[in-house]
Image 1 (cartoon, rainbow, N blue to C red):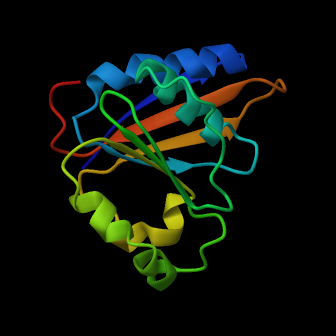
Image 2 (cartoon, one colour):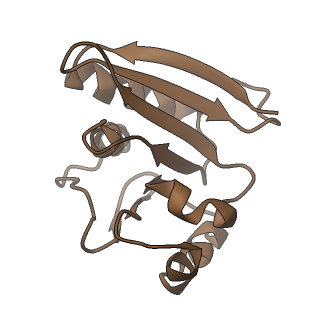
Length: 149
């Protein structure tokens, strides 16, 4: 059973702040599965995490490189599985090795394409378009053993 919380963002800046506010609540080696349609704000959410980690270089969607690593405290690994067809292809990327690394935040866009590979402690974050152009609903589903939220 997971514990879920929902918040609403009314602007891109607010989405960044929600991601920044989430960081202190994350375990040191968190895996974040980011879900949502194209343009829902997944990359923008990762940019907020990066800012909170003190990462100053631009954070863009790694759609073509698939995996981008950033030196932060802790480090951030940003994965985009949009171009990955299935779990076998994700395995060839070394996704499981990434999960074995005990340090850093791993943010995975289009994580549903490798659902069976995700650790049981994965935190699922779903971003949905709202009624207004910049409005988003952000749902965070914590693993069932998350008791210190």
